[in-house]
Length: 67
Image 1: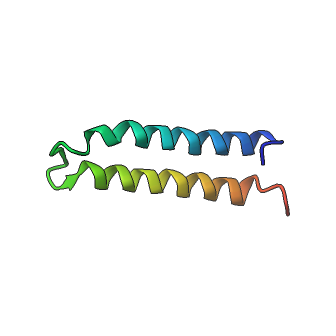
Image 2: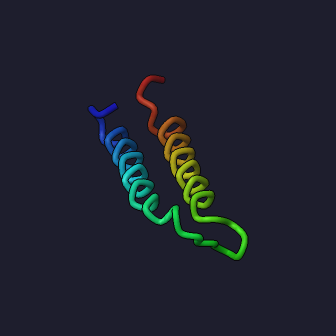
């Protein structure tokens, strides 16, 4: 996966999302509500899953090297 550019981009996106999740977790103890009803841990989890899902689908359907 790391031997071609789309694979590297895929891994970098996943790594950056993990770093972003680690950065956001420091605010989980505070009572932050987004959009008036969704808590910060739930929103960050949803964003984390959506980023991984979109990155995987784009990589798998457009750049998969083993066809």
